Length: 451
Image (cartoon, rainbow, N blue to C red; front, side):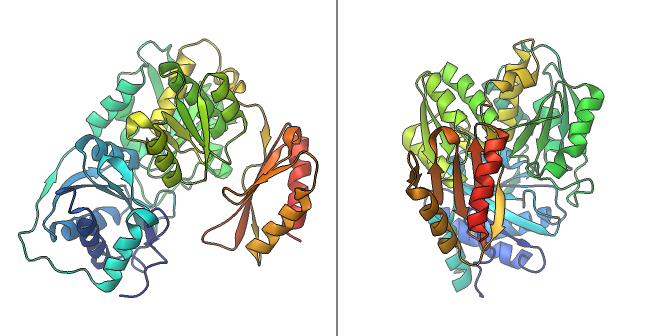
């Protein structure tokens, strides 16, 4: 078979349906995954999102798994964190069919081992790719079977067991599901909680007719922000297509930075387990390690990417981890990411006091930030080195290269410059005491990067 490196990514398999992905290839991926996990697991749990191609591709993958003698538990329509719940609670490897926030023509497969342990390039994906490229060997034994199981109610009950909202004051919350899987999970998760949900785009539609299901793009928050103001809601929540990420909007319609959510949830988790370790990636606001330390916790910095965070959580027993991209990881959720659980924590914290969400989150937002700025460059290494040389000799400046180039200017701020793994881009993130300082530092770095 031809080279599959174009669709087997660092953390998942993803491509255009009909061009890069079809039922035959997905069946081979299922058989190769079965061969990978067969020594340890007799069954695989499979879920899928609302894309038109997802049920058929999930069925083809199940055919591949059962062709190698393993059984399949199909949970049908699911969010990605619902699939992680199934993998964790049933102690089975899992496969989730989704392309997250990608356009409708895409689909993909997120894989995990039993207990929702991630499968990436270094933990099985490269081996799966090699097996498919070389041809999956046939299995002469008895094929496995497929059973269906609905885990949505159990998933919702488990989340509610981790965050108690029974004593919350009544809240009105606008939820934009973006026609993605949040429309499937939110009604069940919030059932019986004293929160009035104002639904937006809950109809499951993999063509995303209203806006892209990517809450990190400000353009996709405009409708939610307007609805929060119009209904005088206490908060807004925006989920991505597979509902594993959640973005929070305050009562004024302003976005709450994911770093502020990370700090807020960290404080709540540290209250349950004083002295615990909290993971944050190196693009997360400096306020996160400051606040974790102030609350008696141990803040641990990692590279960007869910596999690095989950690996560090496993090594250290960390209770929680957060990323700037609105991915939130919980030890009590098998170290997997779940935006829904983070949202419940935010609403519980809001409901426990009488103030507004902007008042609540203000104490967790200490600095101004640029957001991620991409620059197309001819030579990533040369441009990065030019930036390093420009800052290296300055007084009080420290530099590290844990993930790209991080330059800390002390009280003046810091920035990280990372190369994209898939495109000729350098990604810049800047943080400083105020917006003027962010602009000054951003302009200086971009002048070097863009030459």
